[in-house]
Image 1 (cartoon, protein in one colour):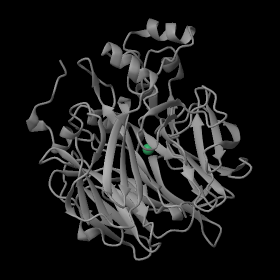
Image 2: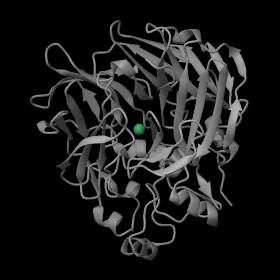
Image 3: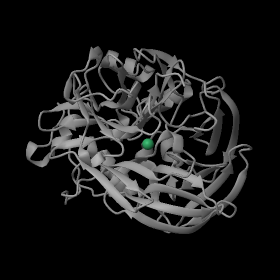
Image 4: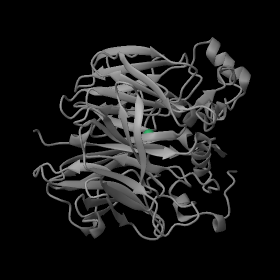
Length: 485
Ligand SMILES: [Fe+2]
């Protein structure tokens, strides 16, 4: 049986991930409060781990759960939703046998080292591609992304899994990250992937997703690069001082998560790459820190790159906290804060770096038309002001206004939890935008879609829609507008 911590030690957020998610077919959503904005026309997609157990066994880490994708279609006639597990080879094989069969980010091979080696020698997948991290909406298909492997293509409306996606060129050894960046000015899509030979693959796609240019940069060691930033003509990489015990991973003795070791005495490496040529512009090094996510980046009038990110003191605590999330109880405090950085792209030297929000926060985002360009507002998931012990999940949405230096926030209330908020441009009025997120109501044990006016976050949601089942916390999402521009 799965061991469950006693309720007295669990916070209400744990109920969002306590049971495997239940899929549902296309279902009309009922409005709980307010009204759907008339300019909200398109589809919200979100991806995250839908199940954290199989056959009475728990996953090793929150990142190990099988990907499940939610689509919420907003049409002039109302909203409807569909929720589906990505039908990966690993998911189908494990579902058929009702037990874990593959190694994963936080799990060594559940069938032992010899099985791991048998898979390697017979050229079978030794790791499960969980397809659980993010989504990329292309004109004719949706991609479910996982940074250790290739994307899976899904049907935009039904979420039916079509299969592995190569974007025209990807080989099985070429991972495609879960953090592609779409340039709003050109429609080009940039992405990366780090393979087991420490090659950093760079990809540039046109707006259809077809990869038009790729290059490889050889790195030292085996860096952990979850995301990067687009700043005008540059791609910016911060490589945290993490060393991987490659032998332990390659021989199947340890999972990736257990093989990553924080090198406290070393710095974070900086890499600036020209987005057109994929040539290295500069390399540098600075103080050590770890980040999962950037908010945005741009080149300012003085030629410096300005960017923001959520910075953690080190990797070990944030990784351990994320492992604990899957158990339903967290003990480790790992607060990330929003930082603003200015760096010289010609020399990769940091000119200034300062804390912008000193409360625990994550998933910084900006309006899509501001990506890579100068911007004013960064939105993110935020710890409620009243939280004191670090064991709560995000219960507020913040908007930091860099022009006025103020934080505007929406506190969702007791036992109400948000995932990454997304900025959705109004399809009918370019001056307006909406913040859309999925909220888990830990009091009533149900999930809802919440919509805020991006300019009036602290007024509370303008609309709440009930979802048919609990949607476990997702990592990342995207918006696909249905109005032709
Ligand atoms: Fe991420």
